[in-house]
Structure formats: C-alpha cells, structure tokens
Image (cartoon, rainbow, N blue to C red; front, side, top):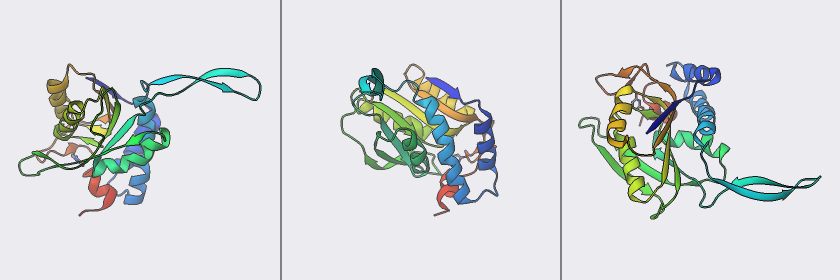
Length: 210
Ligand code: URA
C-alpha cells in the first residue's frame, strides 16, 4: 500500500477553508471539487496510455491517448458523490460506477446498500472516491469488493485520513498495490470516530443533514 499526501500551498489553503465550520455548503461543494481535481492530477500519474498518431497543423507526430478499457471512477455514496465532478473534470472519458456504503454508527459495521458496477473488472484501473478515511472500514470493504470483481490497480482519493484508519488498512492490505492519495493526514480519531481536527461530517456539510 502506498500513501501520498499532497504537499502544495493551494491544497493547504483550500483545505483550511473547507475545515472552517462557518464555510457554507455551496462553497464547501466547490472547494471539494477543486481539491479533488488537484488530487486527481497526482492520483492519475500511473493511468495507462498508449501511443497515438496525430497531425498538427505543421507535421505528423506521436502523442498519447488513454488506453482501453477506460479508467473506472467509483464514488462511495453519499459523500464521495461530491468528489465526482472534480474527478471527471480531469478525466472526462472515465466510466463511472457507484457503491453505496454506510457505517452503522452504533456497531461501526459497514453495510453495502447500493451497487452499480460492471460485473467483470478484470485488469481495470479503478479510482475510488471517499472524502474521509476515518476507521478505514468503508474503504477496506470497497477495496475488497473491487478486487473480488477482478480490479487490477486501485487508487483511492481521500481528502483527509486518520492515522488509525491508515494503520488498519496497512495491516489488511499492506501487501497489495493499493495507492491512497490525500490532501492531509490528520492527528487522530475522537471517541465517535470523527477525524480530528477534521472537517466534521463530509456528507452533511456537502448536502445538509438528512
Ligand atoms: N466521516 C466523516 O464525514 N467525517 C469524519 O470525521 C469521519 C467519518
């Protein structure tokens, strides 16, 4: 497992505004999209390309195009949906599948309540979107699910991660090729498994409490 924390002043600035409890939902949504586009630039470093011949106004030359099958982007509902626009802005031809997963706040168990993905992901490059890597439970279940379907290379894009969640994932998936790209590694989890200092409940801040 490889963890990359993006070290960039614009990322730090946007994240600071995102963390602020007085930032409104519309601004929060916009900042999440912008941050994800910056993270996606780093996360797609290994995206598969192949040579393509083109003609410029001056001459013929060889460039690159995205290889088939296209990359698959999987936002984890609900909060991951707020990251989708920022990702597809950078990779507009990506396919998009959906995984609905939620944590039972009493037992902390993860339930899968929705799934819309190709049955066969053999050889696919998959980009999972989930803003908050807290205990790591949701991401672990999502990654296992995608591997069972045959996914070859999985990259997770998260805004924040807690050291506890990263350690739990490392223990279970340490030997795998999974990559995790983050805007920041925070201090810890609190007693309710919220990330500290964090930004609160990402889904609620994106969409309002339901
Ligand atoms: N999910 C969130 O939205 N926020 C946290 O701090 C932890 C999990």
